[in-house]
Length: 233
Image (cartoon, rainbow, N blue to C red; front, side):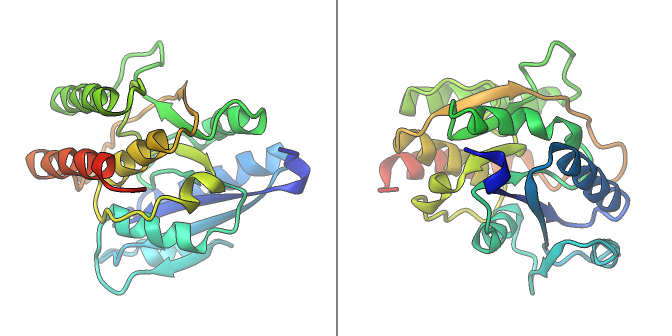
């Protein structure tokens, strides 16, 4: 891909992150301007009840708000439908992902070495600031996905990703919650697209609380693995 002739769509799902969304947008803008690559930022507000939407309106982004709270998957699917880019990036709005590492995810695609790039928390030499239960769940899902698809990854649940538009075009995603990352990965592997991981930093949120309910969302992730593996893409 020629960076000068392409567009990158950066999708930021947003739900009650008033303290971080502005900084995340500013940092994404700064790093993308430094690359010289054309880009658009798409913020999908999942019916926040704090002032997240008002903060996002202060920035030159494409902003959409869901009429009801649908979940992370619903927000990402809405963003994918609006994206115009040749490459689509997803990054969380809570500040846990470093926008400055975004080029690291783009390079394997730009160099035609990958179709989907996952930013892995577990490839970094630094210790991962994550809860033990979450780490155990990620390792378990990594193993199940490898058994079902033959693709080995170290961080199947990472939401920091870059992918070619072609990867999304054939997937017909169904997930509404956090399981969407798993559905995307399994369907990508089934379609024989190249999956690649790069190390990223990760910072556990220091305020508020995550929307993840471990047993509930874990079950939905497992179901999504099985469903995505069995169904046609």
